[in-house]
Image 1 (cartoon, rainbow, N blue to C red):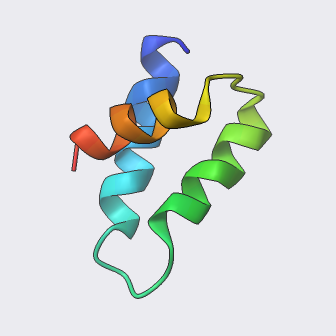
Image 2 (cartoon, rainbow, N blue to C red):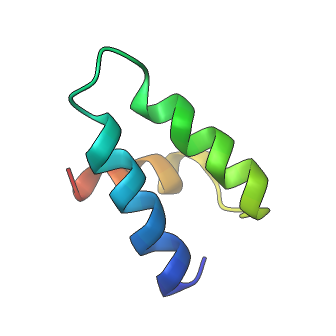
Image 3 (cartoon, helix red, strand yellow):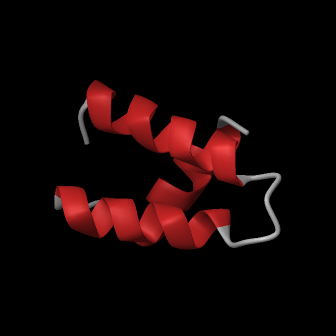
Length: 51
């Protein structure tokens, strides 16, 4: 995952964290749309560290 993808997904995570919807679901969707292939646990930990 490149820096751009990490920053973009971190922004998505931060914007959707306080909403009563699944912010992790948005991350999975955007990960699929961008074709990011990272191990699931690493991806979850890396993105949640930002929020």
